[in-house]
Every structure is written in C-alpha cells, then in structure tokens.
Length: 177
Ligand SMILES: [Zn+2]
Image (cartoon, rainbow, N blue to C red; front, top):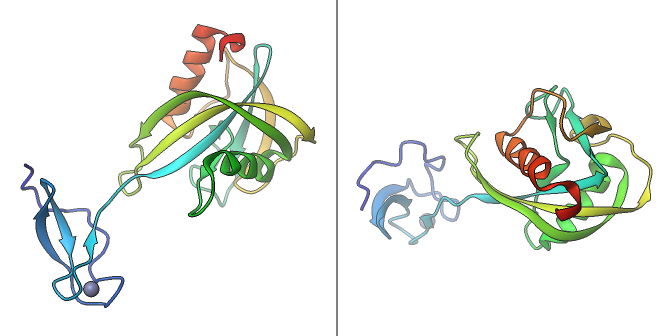
C-alpha cells in the first residue's frame, strides 16, 4: 500500500458539491475524497488514438502547430477519445481533422502508456489505417502533414512512444503491421 500523499492531485474541491477534498486511503492508494457527498477522485489515464497510415516504407506524420502542445514537434496523427465516443470512431475523426484523410481503421499496431506529461497520463492505441478518401491537408493541431520515410522520420518527435512505434514498424516491416 502506498502511503504517499497525492502531491499532484489537481482537484482541491469536490466537483459535485464544492466541499474541500481530504486525502483518504482507498484501494491501496491515497486519493482525494469528499467528506460530504462521498465523491472519490480516482485519477486515471485518458485514452489516446493514433492512425498509422503506411505506403511501402513511408508513413503519414504531422508537425504540431504553434497553438498546440509540443509546437514544432512531429507525431503520428492522434488525439483523445471523447466521452461516449467509440475508439475507432475517434481515430477516424482525429485523422480527418488533422490530415484531411478519410480512413478505414484496421488492426491494433501497438498499445503504450504515455508518461511524458506528468499532469496527464494517457494510454495510446495505434491502429493500422487505410486511406479511403480525402486529400492530405493539415488541420487542427497540425500545421504540416507529409509522407515521411519510416527509417528517417522528422525530428523532434512530440511523443516518445511514437518513437517506439516507428522502431517497431521498421523492425517488423510495414506489411506485417
Ligand atoms: Zn462532494
């Protein structure tokens, strides 16, 4: 059991009744809880999706725009799954928003935990995707999208786990992804 205080807890007040939260031990961890209504702040990672679009030894990647997080860094097109949204629908939506491409969503290429942002942990799911329409054009978080060589992706990468996925794709070859 961890007795460590929740030093990076974000919530100080109950989101339901605005009572100041207090630390309690529940499920082997210290968590912030509401002494009035019983709300417990379980901090869980959110889910991210990324669209792996390959053509031979090339992959679609995007450069993050000036108003996004990690501006100027490159990533595989990605985003967060919304509440009430199916994970594959999220992949289709994010890909269309960021690259202008309509895709079909295929097999899972990789799943990784992302800890690069201490304030927001995520679990990322990378799907192999095929283009079914649209024109490659940057939008939303990206200001540039391009086909780039798998063995020489542009740097820097925004997310360390994209580096793991790119290395996996180089190792296994695009055909097996
Ligand atoms: Zn409350």
